[in-house]
Length: 108
Image (cartoon, rainbow, N blue to C red; front, side):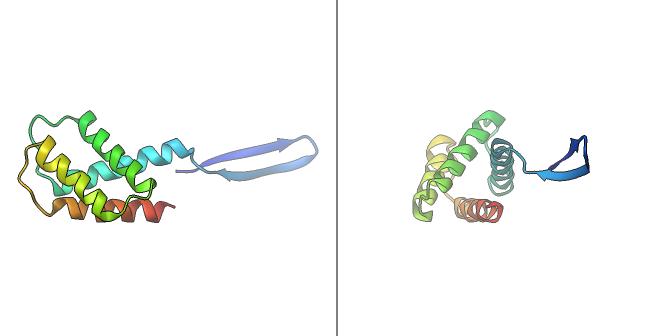
């Protein structure tokens, strides 16, 4: 979301300019979107809390931003899926990575 700011000057008419959202707010929104993608594709365990899910989404976001290739991202989410949450292996991690990469690519 952008913010509208009015600039005032004693001798000039009022003019409006659109301010970009702060980078941190944009990143937070993208991580939140990744959390939504994770929720849509994983049948999360009952003991998974919001903070934990957000942390893994943030880690995925950081790895995408750092330029990790998709195979490395797939391995990371497979580890989360199987080793951290004891879920059976599935192809959901591929969908999550592909969609998350798309979200971040479309935001830039």
